[in-house]
Image 1: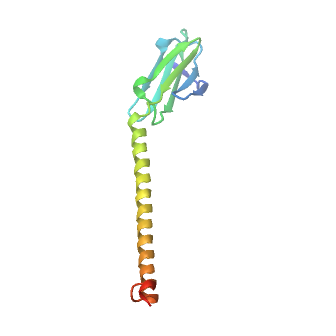
Image 2: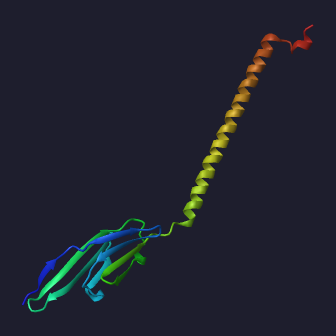
Image 3: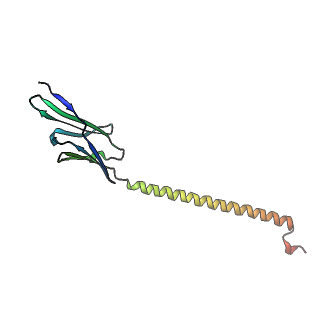
Length: 151
């Protein structure tokens, strides 16, 4: 006798935490040997399973659930546990790279340094311009070296 399948869509609940995301899938009646949890190279988590419902009719129940993994998921650390008919699949997030914050700090310091240099250049140009303007005024009104030498 050929297998006949009854497809079903298990209910899910998502729990999001700082360091990981957990999907809880309701699979009452399933044993862990009847469930597969795997990832593929397309960034999918695939949870599937099948179990015998009626041996006299060779009737089976089966499901397949595909979940797109976020880019910050650490695929090598995904774990699954079946307890009281609920499959909990924990998907840890990748650890934030320590060096990235120091790189960000360097970028901030570099931006600050550039702003300081631009500010100093602006002050120097302003003083130089004012100095030349003052010299022009002095030469216009006091062409022979200032008020003391006129006399």
